[in-house]
Amino acid sequence: MQKSKLRVFEAFAGIGAQASALKRLGIDYEIVGISDWFIDAIECYSEIHCTTKQVKAPKDREDLLSYLSKYTFSMDSVRPYDISRLNDEELKKLYIANKKCNNYGSILDIQAQDLPNIDLLVYSFPCQDLSTGGLCQGMKKGSGTRSGLLWQIERILNGLKQQKRLPEYLLLENVKTIQAASNKKDLDEWLEFLSSIGYYNDDCMILNALDFGVPQDRERAFIVSHLGSKLNLNSKIKKKERIYKFKEFFRNDYSNPVLKAEADTAQLNKTPSREQMWKINGRSLDEHTIVRTITCNMDRTHCAALFPYTGEKGVSYRRPTIREAFLLMGFSEKDYEKTLKLGYSYRKMNKLIGNSIVVNVLEEIFREMFVNKYSLKG
Image (tube, rainbow, N blue to C red; front, side, top):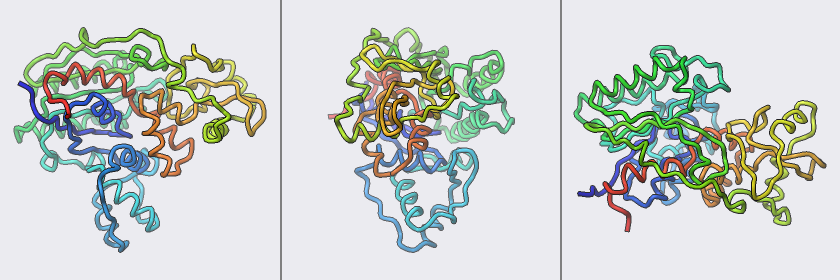
């Protein structure tokens, strides 16, 4: 028997790849809440997913601060920020976005009794301390690392268990080094905790975006947990042939002034260090192009790709534009264009999209999890 509506909570929501995947899948779902403290991500999530909601901000600064001071926010996703330093327009913008997203705030501040009823909890906790690009400080319980925020989910699930309101489904996403020897003990401890409260954990799946219709070599770890029984999705996820349509992902028609301006923004000056970057990442931009993993900083030694380009800075090379990065992460061009009103810089947008999840991969996971269990819209 199919259920009516899937109730979803996005912890560490970012810009909402999970919501995009569920929307594309066409099942009847509701995002009953999100958790994030990064102001840029909250505002970007709102522009992509919450455009039909109407929220009016108070005119009085004290009223804005009275509401927003209930939450902990960050300007850099690393440390808390004193929002009283924001001007009135910035406060109104944040107020509206936070309300539209139904954001419950920092995972540290969420109490189980405050959460709505949830069918699916997705938790893509910070990867910095697990990633080879980070300091590899791990996710040990009580460590205080950003990746250690995983254990806040333990606290919340214990609270929901006491209230007999555990979500039926959980989905973990992170970098594949979550399975590395240095992290295995902590991952095992996490999975043992889930088992102790009634979840059956599927084996960890390492899925590459290349196998789901996207020309980006991006491997990520996914673990599905289900109350009462194992789903065994590993053998059910359907991979596609690695054939891609160039025009669906790359925008090199520089006769279009909008695309030309975006390419100019993505162009790099020639410097000795960037010449070395070119040797590592340089490639032609054609129907055979496949990029490396898009990270939160595409101006680094091992970046997604560099393409030959002649623009405002002369003859050099460019990174993928943010429009292209959105497409390579499985978001739509319309999603990208909704974010333009935010006026964020290339670097800000790069951080947001690089920390997201490829929508195509999530779509296939959710298809196997829910398509025969929840009603389709319409």
